[in-house]
Every structure is written in C-alpha cells, then in structure tokens.
Length: 200
Ligand code: GAR
Image 1 (cartoon, rainbow, N blue to C red):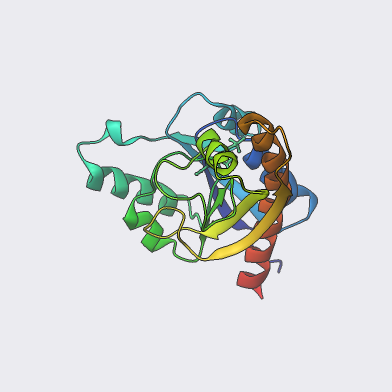
Image 2: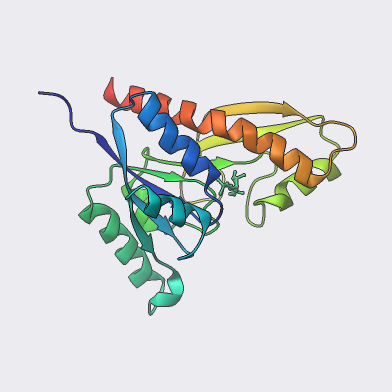
C-alpha cells in the first residue's frame, strides 16, 4: 500500500507567490504531500484567492475574533489538528504564531524570511523593511532563509539559505524582487529536504 500524503497547511497574509511556488513543487516533484488548508489573518488576499481556485480549504482567523490570546491559540491549534495537519509552512504570514502552535509543531513548522538570518530578523523586520535595512547597512549580498519556527521571531534553526548579490543602485523594491525570485526556488527545496528527512 502506498504511504498516505503528508498533510500540509500554509499560513499567508499577502500575495502568496511563495505558496504558489510550493504548491507547484509539491505537484511537479511528486513530494508525497498535499495542501489541505490555507490559513490567513486576511480573508481577501492573493494567497486565499489562489487556495480557493485550487479547491484548498481556507480559514480566515485573527486574534480580533476571540476574547483573548488563549482562545485564539486554542482555536488555531484545533483547526490544524482537526484537519490532520502534520506540517505547517509560513509563507508571508505577518503575525506571530501562538506558542501553543509552535510547541505542538516543533520540527514541523517552517518560515521563509527575506534576508540572511541571523542578520535582519526579529520584530518589525518583515517585507520591505528588511530590504531597506539591508541597503542601509551597506551589505554586498542578501538572500533568503528557511528556518524552523520556535517561540522567538526568526530565531529557529536554519534549514536552508539562498544568496543574491546587492547591486549598485538597488532600491528596496528592486532588491525585494531579486530576493523573492530566490525564495521561489529555496522554499520548495527546503520543503523537499524536510519531507525527505522526516520520511527517511
Ligand atoms: C516574502 O518575501 C517573504 O519572505 C516575506 O514576505 C513576502 C511574502 O511574499 N516574509 C516576511 O517578511 C516574514 N517575516 P508572498 O506573499 O508573495 O509569498
């Protein structure tokens, strides 16, 4: 009998281009996995639209919908458990993941960050702010990092990194686009690595 597919959830807040890249890789590389849930703090965003188009269940969940952080955390964890989610992929998710969830999924929850961690990570370092800081610091290269998520922002063990040059005349937007292209190759490779290691 063939192994059941590994059940993946993706967390997004925006365009969802990393989700699209992951989704394509899962299909094209035969990774033995499937996306069963797309979670977002925004009901309308590119990622949620993409999930709907692919027939993947969506869940709009934000702390505002709950009486407090505990109820929010429990509901998020319950949502993942009730769908049998085994691996969580943060792909442009701009909220902190509750500790209850990071603890429950330790070793099976990844994030992609648009810089070479441990530099340019931490609270407030997301999206364009990261690239602005990289340029301001005069770095000659940047890149992306896929890391395990733990209770601290951008601090978990690094799984894979990809590098890109910083070029003369780069604006934060131009650098962001170069890094994003790198992310679209890196995140699928990191997922493949995780799945291979956890199956082998
Ligand atoms: C990506 O560049 C991702 O690394 C970044 O947001 C973008 C999402 O793009 N994430 C963070 O800054 C998290 N700290 P996408 O929605 O097109 O995948």
